[in-house]
Image 1 (cartoon, protein in one colour):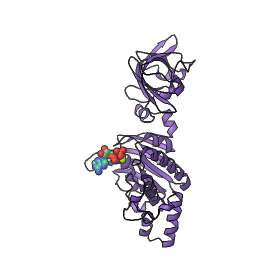
Image 2: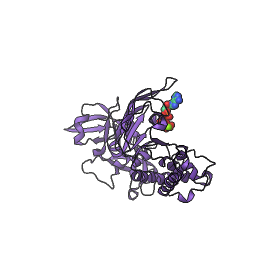
Image 3: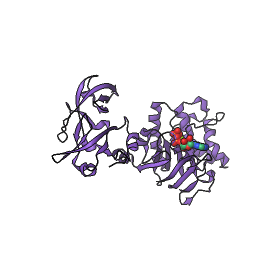
Image 4: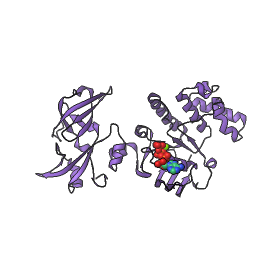
Length: 364
Ligand SMILES: Nc1ncnc2c1ncn2[C@@H]1O[C@H](COP(=O)(O)OP(=O)(O)OP(=O)(O)O)[C@@H](O)[C@H]1O
Ligand SMILES: [Mg+2]
């Protein structure tokens, strides 16, 4: 097992495209680290550089105690699982899993023992004689994992391994991979553009955009304290609400004034935002309440809104509201459900409000 350190790594492709910019992060031994960000932000390139499949333009990559910049992929003691898991179609599941060990000239008995152990772990023992085309998507994905596991690598690298699966299977495999991580007790670096995967699976998230790292922290720390507007908007579904407004002082109180509504700023935030004139406020859908049902003594201001669309999710409802200037997404309990086109009054839990500089978009 090993830790991985990516230190000031850059990738400039032959066409001068600067895809990865001074990226630094660490995966501690046995940590599950997820690189997340929009398409094209440099996640796969970063992972491929760790694997040695792509040369780095500058910086250092450490696996365990050694710098691996010049170590060829096969000697880096890593195993990579890709999105298109590319099993050998003419080989059985057993042979697919045994292939890498045969290449490494392991003894037949040893190969058999490892493959069977791994197949039990992944609950695919009864599939060992089948060919890939006789398997479901989820089963194929498990075989691809098995192929990586049999090699007992120090580090697993995953590049969007679940994106070929349907929604239900993805949820199931998410849990399987988390369990697997606990059983194998190994370091995992996992790439996805799916923020739900990042939130639910990782010990640590590295949020990237345009080749740069924006924030590194635990999922909840990032959700609760995003460093800038991009991170705030990227993690969380539905996305955080954003309002543009002015800071107004009146009778010792500080208000955020959006134009069509005005809300008092939580006392602990006052000092940080008082000096600003215009500002962006972020509020997550779950921090908005129908004031007929939830009365917040600390934040009595009510905001008039029209309910435009209601999306039933079963256990909760996503409600799309409109005020004079803004669209607001709220997450309501089914018992508080407004009707379409109904005029309601909402309140904000201002303790949960996030404020961002309008120019730099950084958190205040
Ligand atoms: N060989 C290459 N030559 C030039 N540019 C490349 C090359 N490979 C990738 N890029 C560019 O580098 C950027 C990062 O690509 P990368 O594959 O790392 O993105 P990604 O974050 O994995 O995105 P996705 O979520 O779509 O997989 C992209 O803009 C891509 O077009
Ligand atoms: Mg990619």
